[in-house]
Image (cartoon, rainbow, N blue to C red):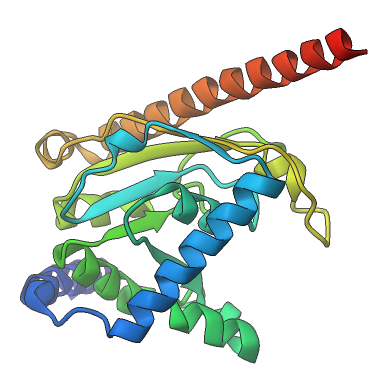
Length: 249
């Protein structure tokens, strides 16, 4: 059996296990309260100090699994997208991040899914499918890495198999401003106005009708459209602020 056949079989088995996990017990009360506390506290800080503005929250399905697909501008991104969602998000984290004890405690307390970037990552894929089948949203950055210039990079096709096997809505989202706040070449983060735009989700039926190339192109088109809208929104906001400053001056 070829390696690709074995991988496909593992993905199929992961879907079966994910379906069985749909009735898995809910998280413990302490974990739920901890996430809710951080969500409220960090959303307040982000609103006050980074002036985070969110549009399109109504596109997030109120229940059921959702694959949230976002552009990737900075290390801020998982936190910012999580704060923009009213539902609890699941995050993926490369396994190297679990090596630093304080950060390991934090991301484990938030039930982050470890991804082995040096191996097959099948264990992380299985756990992601379990949570999607359990009716939980999961955040993925399909560019695969942070942007070098603030623009949306071509998407990598790795998420397409997951999207088709999970059979959940695909929610496009884009942000603008996080790159200026914390570009990949800067060691420490800064503050900047952040705008986030959610787009119209792709239904499971529509995703199933596409082949991998078509699905990749459609998701990328929708993320780029969200990015175009959010950039225009941020530019208008900046121009309005400058006009008010000039009037006051």
